[in-house]
Length: 117
Image (cartoon, rainbow, N blue to C red; front, side, top):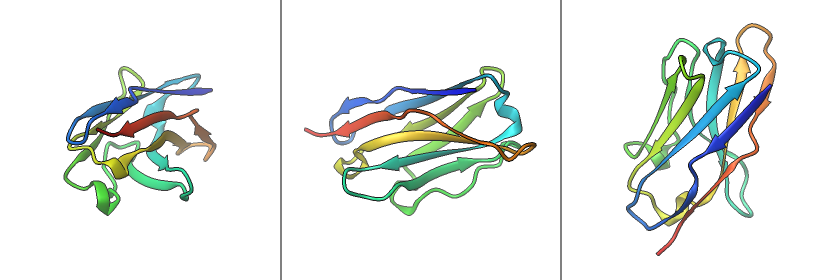
């Protein structure tokens, strides 16, 4: 089982990035998915979640109206579209999968997002 994030990078304030989390070894449609982030010196923070049913959970207040989580079960991939990026969005972003069948939990290695002018 493997989760691989991609799409991070350096972007100017106000810019956009789309993160992807591709799964292998299991089917994402049987998992609730979450994006977390951790900035230097700060605790890990839940950013957004989407259930295996496709129902979107809540977003952390600081990203509401700017970030959108989605999933493409055919591609076994979950996305995080990030618009109007701010310096405070700088962090390592990790995806997390929790199987609704086994309750096993999996993490990706993370992708760095840096917002700076």
